[in-house]
Image (cartoon, rainbow, N blue to C red):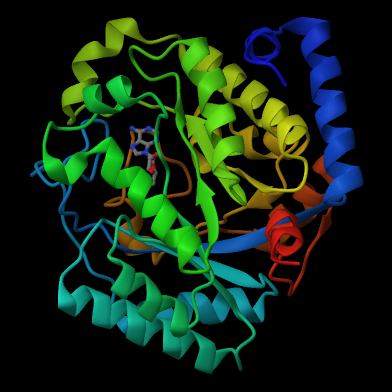
Length: 347
Ligand code: 5AD
C-alpha cells in the first residue's frame, strides 16, 4: 500500500469509513480467525528510571506513590489468569535495569512457569534492556515482548522525550532489533494524536511496522497527563473523540497492511470511549488485555489521566460474555494465541 493511499484511508469518515472497517474485519476473520485472545496484564512496579515527557509515571513526577508489587501478589494475579483460561499474561513495569530488577523478573518468570505447569504464556513489557538480560528472560520463559517506538518520526520522538542518550530514538530501534534477534515475538506501537504529530507521521508509523516486520502491535490515543511536561501543549491537541476515531482507523488500516499479526485493543481507547476496546475488536484488533494488577496499586500506575478499571473487576465473567456477544468473536481460552505472522516466519 502506498503512503498516499494510507493517508487517504486514515482520514475516512462516515459511510466510507464503515467500508474500511468492514474490510478490516473481514480480513481479520479470514486470516487470524473470528477470535479474541486474553492477556492478563500485571503492572508489577511503577518505579521508572526514564523521564518520557508524556508519561504519568516518569521519574520526575514526584506526585506518584511508587510501588513494587510483591512476588506473591504478582504470582497470585498470574494464577488467576491461568485458572480463568487466559492462556497468557503480560508483565509490565517502569523501565529498570538494575541487577536486582533483572534477577527479580527472572525469578518471577520461572515461578509463573512452575505454577502453571509451563502452560501460561508470558509477554514482557519492561522497556529497553541489554542483550544479556533479554536472553536470560527468554531462557526463563518469556517469549513475547512489547516495546513501543511511540512514534517512528525521529524529530517527533526527540520532542516527546528528554534530550539525553538514555532517551534516544536510535537506542529504541536498536532495542527492537535486539528483541527480534533474541527470538522474541516482537510487539511495538505508537501513540496517536500526539502534539506536533501529523497524519503523514501516522502513515509512516504503519509503514515502519511493516518494514520492521513486527509480530504484534498496540496503539492507542495519546491522553494528556497534568503532571507531565507535554501537558503544556494541550492547545495543539485534537479533541479526544477525534484522537479516538483516528486510532480506530489506524487499527483498521494496519489490519489490511499486515493481515496476520496480533493487534491489541488497548486500554487508552477505553479511557475515551467506554466501549472503545470492543469497538477496536470489530475493526481489526484481536487481543485484549484485562487488568489483573492488584487493585491497591492501580491508581498509582496512571500513565495518563482517566485510565479506566481502577476498581475491582466486578462481574468479570459477565463482561466476557458481553464481549463475545458484542464483537461476535469466540474467546481463545487457554491458548497462547501467538502471532500467526511469527509462526509463518519461523517456518
Ligand atoms: N497517553 C497515552 N499512552 C501513554 N503511554 C504512556 N503515556 C501515555 C499517555 N500520556 C503509553 C506509551 C507506553 C505505554 C506503556 O503506555 O505508549 O509505551
